Image (cartoon, rainbow, N blue to C red):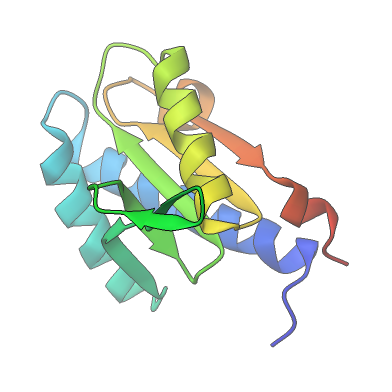
Length: 136
């Protein structure tokens, strides 16, 4: 399968839909690990391939550093999904998500906050990397 911008955008739509479904059923106000486990079940139901709590290799001066840098999900080896359950996003959350996307060299990342009333309107942000621009 050829990875295109259209494919990445359609996958983004499916991931966002899965997050909305979990939020609709579970609601706001729980710990992040609850949403994480529910998303794993939802992705399984939708047959979306993912890696959960993926440890990202960290390279410093051409050496792999033994540190624990983990993203919540890597979806189809193309999109980072970072989830939160917090009062609001802050710049650290955004920077963390973008760093994961860039370290993994994937075209897109999604940051989702489950502690909101309406996940679609106020609970998610998407980011694109230079790898997205290079796709057809």
